[in-house]
Amino acid sequence: MTFGLILALLLGQPSAPDGYVIFWGTTPGVYNQSLTVVGWGTTQAEITQLQPGQRYYIVSKYFDYRGLLSPESNVVSGVAPASGRIQVLWDPPLLAVEAVRVGVE
Image 1 (cartoon, rainbow, N blue to C red):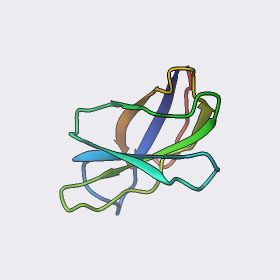
Image 2 (image 1 turned 90 degrees about the vertical axis):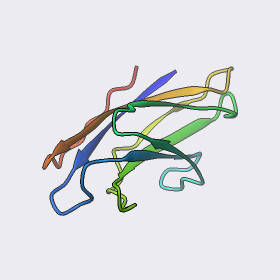
Image 3 (image 1 turned 135 degrees about the horizontal axis):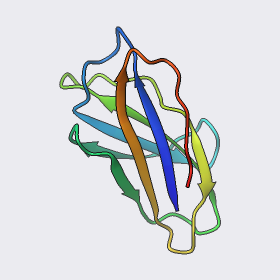
Image 4 (image 1 turned 180 degrees about the horizontal axis):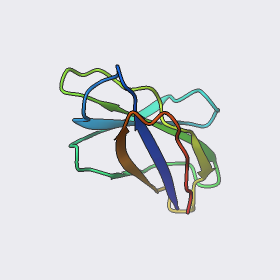
């Protein structure tokens, strides 16, 4: 299963990304797990050891060289497959774009 996230770089927020933090949980707005992904060019990560059949809510933030975090991306949700693994894909932030949208495959 693949989840898509689009992040927006807002003026006055952290500078260009040095990496991303993916957050997830089983309750909307409560993200008790996270995965840090280092590298501007990285646009995907795999979340593993999920409970098959459980719905997960996923958001992402990016961080800059100072460690400052951006606002959250849009939220995507879906049910973990039998493998307990989910690929998360995202587009790099776009300068001064405030709207976000999601594509789930």
